[in-house]
Structures are given as structure tokens and as C-alpha cells.
Length: 252
Image 1 (cartoon, rainbow, N blue to C red):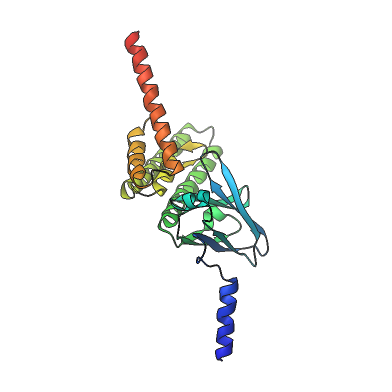
Image 2: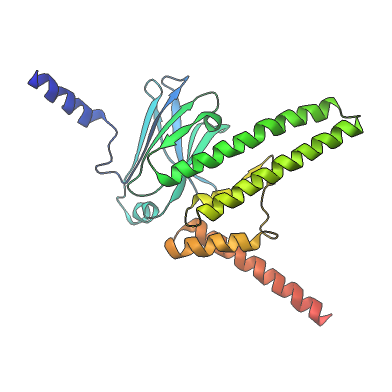
């Protein structure tokens, strides 16, 4: 019995997904797949940087991100976004920093619509944002179908537009409260830039004060974070543009 127990422990230590030498572990189980390939990429301000890929074993995957050089150590020191991909059109994004062990459960049919996440506060918050967006999208898609079915009915279309604006207002209010409740979390950066169907819920120009609030709070905590630095740059460009417009107006 003792030998069997020791053997089980040895197997677990050999094959288990651990965070002993890894600063970040992202693992999970995806139903509906067996030995498919899965890709992990870093979300940067310029796009995606592919980090790793593997063949899943009965839907299980485990990525270990070690901090073994200056670049990876700097990356692990601050919350960063990581995208998991079964294909370019079937992805989900999570947030992790050093010491996090992210655990994801999802269905292969649609990762973003089905996933549940645990193991990191930022990852859980981002999961809440994705769930809220899904709750917005479902009735909006249904309204779009009603709109198409009544394309020549002015009254029906007006009612659909009214309902849509109500849903839009409710979701924007949710995002605003989310940001106010989590001003020091990187997930609030995602909340500000969240969008649907090529439309953002917030505008950098019109909601600049909210963007400035997020940036100033996160800058104190993560001054070297590339997302925060990018937000700071965008704010400076917006302010500079306004100053130039004011200068030209005063000159005229």
C-alpha cells in the first residue's frame, strides 16, 4: 500500500502541471475535443505574440510560463493578457501575473461563451466581463432578427431601436460600475475598451475623464505595464490635440 502511494505521488509530480519553477501556470480542460492543438499567445499593444502550443490530451492542456530572463521576469511582474486559441475564430482571453495558477473549463464549440475560470483575481474579473457581454449580446442578436423580419414596419423598428438603446445603456452602466468598483485592476482597462460588433461602449474622447482615472490609478501600481503606458500615451495625444485645436481657434 505504501509503495502504491509513493508511486502515485511520483507520477503526479512528474506529469502534473505545477507552479514550482514556473511563475505562471495556465491550464484547463476543454470538452468536445481530445488531442487537438491549442495555442497560447501574449496580447500586446501591437497584436498577438505567440508563446507556445501543444497537443491536448483528452481535452486537457497546461502552459507553464517561466521567468528565466529579463524579458519574461518583467512580463511576470505585472498583469498581462493571454489569449488561448483553438483557431483564430475560437479564442478566449485571460489575465495573469506572477504566481497565478489559472484554471479554465470550457466547451470547444465556443470558448468565449462557455468558459469558467478560477485561480487568479484578475482572471475571474475578466471572466465576469465576458459573461456580462454575453448577456448583452444574446438579446441584442434576437432584436436584430426582429428588426430584419420587420424591416418595412416603422413602428416595429422604432420599438426594436428603443429596446436596443435600453440594453446599451444598462450594459454601459454595468461597465462603469465595474470600473468604479475595481479601479486598481487591469480588468478595468479591458472594461473600458470592451466592444461589440465593431462598436465600443466608451469613447476615448467623450469618456476621457474615466480613462484618465483608470490610467492614473493603474500607473501608481504598475508603472512599467505596457498597457498602462499605452493608455498614458493615448491620453497625452488627446490632450495635445485639444490644445492644438484651442490654439488654432484662439489664433483665428
